Structure formats: structure tokens, C-alpha cells
Image 1 (tube, rainbow, N blue to C red):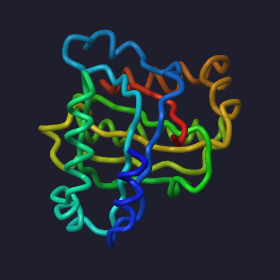
Image 2: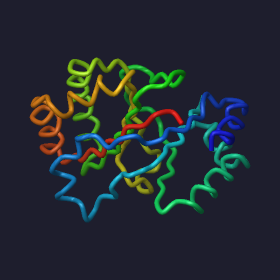
Image 3: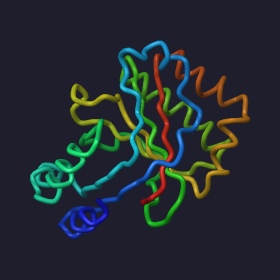
Image 4: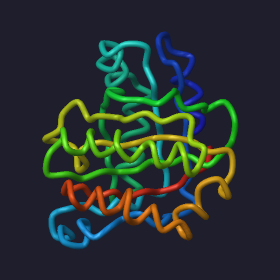
Length: 197
């Protein structure tokens, strides 16, 4: 996959193509996910390939490129489950730095209502900024909601595991400020931590 991504990055208007390998599923699923377990596809993805283009229009030509088709076909042939979407960045704190290694979060959200999902993300983002020093984050909104298993995906980065994990385990405010707000707004979060492969 890294070889294909390197080839994709040489194409015009491809900002980056990066492979992430899963390292840990942290706390954060919450009660709403348990209540909707029969409707929600649990996010358990071993790796993520994130391809960023300069424009929305470039996505269409990317989807037809030989390199991209080869990547998708290979993934489908070797995986039990996969999720392939095109998305736009609808909200952000700051861009995510992919130029150096770190702890990368892909948080897969399922919600009854997209606006509620976006609103509660914005509301709870302040907790992560204050309690974990988070200074970057992007919200990836699937272009075709009907084909996506998830309402949106939040992506961000910390320098090291100790910047995020202790706060999720030991800080009681994570439960009553973040998880309780997710539940009150019918939002399920499925966080997975990754590193650059």
C-alpha cells in the first residue's frame, strides 16, 4: 500500500497519500453504541489509507486512476471488512500534521442526526483541547451519506500516547462532559488510534 501511495503522490493535485496502522482501541465508545449494536457497524479497521486532493473535482479523476483501482481491488480481496469513502473537510481546529510520526486518531461516528453530530463534536472538542493539549483536528464528512457506514470521521494527532490515553482512562470529566454529551445527542463514537505505517 505504501508503494501505491508513493505513486499516487506523484500525480498532480494529490497533496498526500498516507497509510496508517492501528495500534490501540482506546476508551470512548459509550452507551449509545451498545443500544444500537444491531444497527451500527463497529469500526475495527487494521489500517487506513488517507488520500488528500487539492480540489473536490480531483477526486473523480483519482477514483478512475489505475493506482487507486489497484489499491481498492487488493484491499477488497484480502479483507473481511472495509469502508471506502470520499469525504470533505467540513470543520477543523487546525490541519493534522502528517509529516512526522505520532498518535493519530480516526474516530468513526454514528448518529441519528448529522447536525447533532457536528454540534456535539464542536462542543466536546474543547475538552480535548484543554485536557489533552490537542491543537489540530479535522472532520471528514462522507460525500454520499447513504453509502457510508458512519455519519462522519474525526481525524487528529498527538505527539505521544501519554498525551491522550491517561485523560481517557483517569479523568472523570471525560465521561460526564464527553461521553454523556454523546449519549444525550444520540451519537456513538468508535475511536481507533493509529501510527504512520
